[in-house]
Amino acid sequence: MFKHRGKAQPIFLDIWQHFIAEGSLCAQMGTKSRSTRLQLLEAVWNLPEVAALKRNLLKQATDKGEFQVVGHDATFKTLFPIIGQQVMSQREGEFHALHTFVGMSGAIAGMSAQAKEGVPATRQAVQQVLPVDARSTTLWASTDSPDTIEGVADLFPNLEGIIEDPIHLVFRLEATTNEKRTAVSYEALQLQMKFRQPSPQGIVYSKNNTGVLEEAQWDCQRRHVKSTGRDWQQYISEPYTSHQQYVDDLLDLSLRHAEAMKKRDPKGRCALEVLKAGSTLQHYGYLSLVFYWGVGLALLHNHL
Image (cartoon, rainbow, N blue to C red; front, side):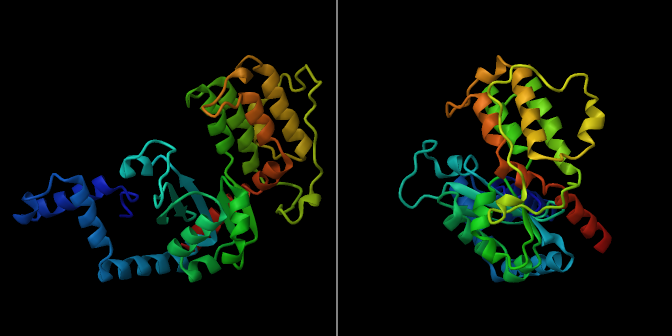
């Protein structure tokens, strides 16, 4: 389960190959029924011995500090083919959002199928996947939905801050170009990498202390690019010092690629709207904590 990140077919094939190599005649019987294979895997996963193994592995990881930083993501695409439904057409009792939780090293703590995203579903997923002991060690949570984690922060009694995944702005931009990497998304990625540097402001942003950062404005009247002749390698190695600096960079990006700003994603949003939405103080505040993920990895490495 852990080796193949919860993917049923690779798990089944790996088990089958193992017993074939052991000379088991029963393994050659196999089954062509996908649903039967899934039922067999579920039955094995629910065995008391397997459940005990999982608890022990989570405890070992917790003791080593794996969950000082927890990553959370919820995806819909994974469950669509399993359920056999029309995309984005949900029926009563179906689970469409697969919530996944990972530790600092990328180890998967577990996955939870929920009806949707949002606070109530995420609360159930957290409680289902992460034991209380593991959650008690969590200092930082990384996610593409900070508001959701804010809503379940009480489940992490020692949580110090929430980190926004810097890559998701790039993904949202690439949704306007059929998920293809373009000059726009590449430059956006370069800018997002600045958040890996420690912020000189030393401020931990949350929805309860929004006033600790000065909010910038997107100048809709500006028609010229401010940043010209920039040494990109030097620039991305330096942290952002203000929200206005970040907003100005995204505005420059939109001006350099004016035609590309008209492209739209499947939801009808154009690239310019995506950039403006991503430039808010809330996004900047959570992004400014990205470097703490690196701090967490250093802590884990030293502990190991």
